[in-house]
Amino acid sequence: MKFKQSDGQNQRIERITTSHLVVSIDMAKETQVAQATNYRGIVLTTQHLSFKNAIQGFEKLQRWMEGLQQKHRLKDIIIGMEPTGH
Image 1: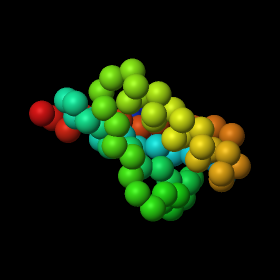
Image 2: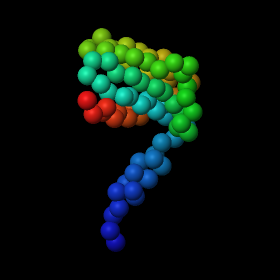
Image 3: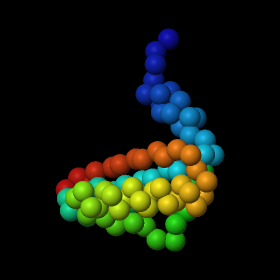
Image 4: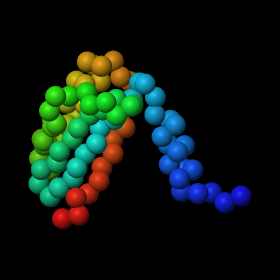
């Protein structure tokens, strides 16, 4: 039996539970943008987070994610990134 790439993707999706914070990051050269959703894709913030491509920016991202975890009582974080192609 051949293993299809969609099978692996489906298995990863099935591991996402109600306790996950899902953070999507659009990467760019200097400024990244992040958005947070729950396991169903419902947006948890009123505004996205912009942060610089520097240690201070990533620390800002970490504080933002930890704050959302506490606010929404979520245990785990899944981060997805897609390069913009610049």
